[in-house]
Image 1: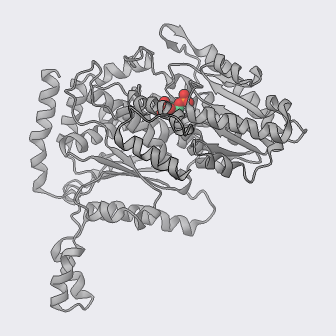
Image 2: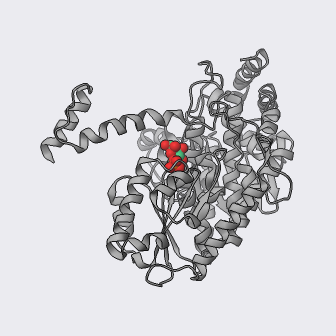
Image 3: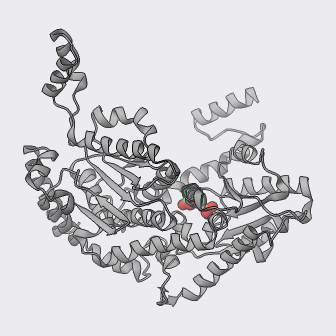
Length: 546
Ligand code: F6P
């Protein structure tokens, strides 16, 4: 770590105690323009409010000094130039090229990828149109009413979360379903109510080797063949992968195979052909709007000054909480039911990217890195884990996401939803002192014994930080903005922590051991010699029952 970086971290640590002298609410009293000064509008349809974090202008200046010491602007330029920022795998991470709707060249490793990207997107769109219009039909001549995406991780979470978020834009297109878990219940339950004669399967896998996806694809194929015969496969299966050789071996009609490139990471691949199920579900025009939303954020991330740059502010506030305030978790609470899977999507994006302990060059001297990310839609979360967020011993920063306009035409429900969102953010900041708790109990008629007995339980520390993402409505463009904002936030933090966010070596060991154990589990006669005592004992217990 350079002297400048170490000094920037030390300056933040030295600054932190000065904030103990006041409460977050006092910052609003001291600065009538705090809301304006500590919020950024992407445009008239999208606002990021971070005024409820207990930070001052000085805090932000120190955080941005750290970003400069880490050469954030240079790293950002390298990312967008298509340089091999994924150093361990010697690749670019150029998912932004997939959503660049301008006509400029898109160099990746020196080659202009624009023609290839546009050709592949056109192929996806033509197929999506053919399925939606009923021009492409199943083996018995029926139009498709269902599309089942078979994939896992980035080949599932993105399209699954997006199809749900944008379901009002589906029109009369096929319904999208998603099968990911190797647990056969996932495929069986999904297919239980579907008519296979009207069902299209999309096998999505960057590598086309992933155990879960290959098992589910083989079982789905067997189900289809049993119902409609071998010749139905070419009409009912499509595939998305970077490994076209492996797809060919699976027997999928080459005209229904859609490619992308190794410089698109799995968790960044929704913008690529991996979005096929989404493009079928919402149609190409809406998909283009989604790309436009991502592109809006790319422009903003590159052009806005650091102190008015939403992903930079998101990232640096996260660094403040993680490294200076030592907070280990981060909650994302959409007050938007259709974003129910957004926290799960962000778990992969954030935790698979920044859940690392070594620096880019393999050193062990990094700071604390990615927090645990979790969340559920509000208001449901309020009735589950918010107790801990309000009164638990750990402070957890929260992102609240909410639309200004209802998507369902029910203004009453939306008013309640919106009020709950802002009330929670306010409660986390405001808190309630012991004296306030006593006063409330007295006002409610409690006797003095009960006042003293109950008041401590009604204290809220307050000063619990949250951001609010307020957008006009959850349309495809807004949705694309949200996804891209979090992608760049994760990148910003990776730069501060000096880690490569684009590899995922941490998923390998479990995969290797699962491949080694699978034949031992499947074959009751196989020896468990050489396994640790616990693993061998558990296999033995299962054998005794099975
Ligand atoms: O196990 C993690 C992972 O490699 C993710 O990074 C990826 O999104 C997922 O598996 C699925 O991989 P694939 O698209 O190659 O099937």
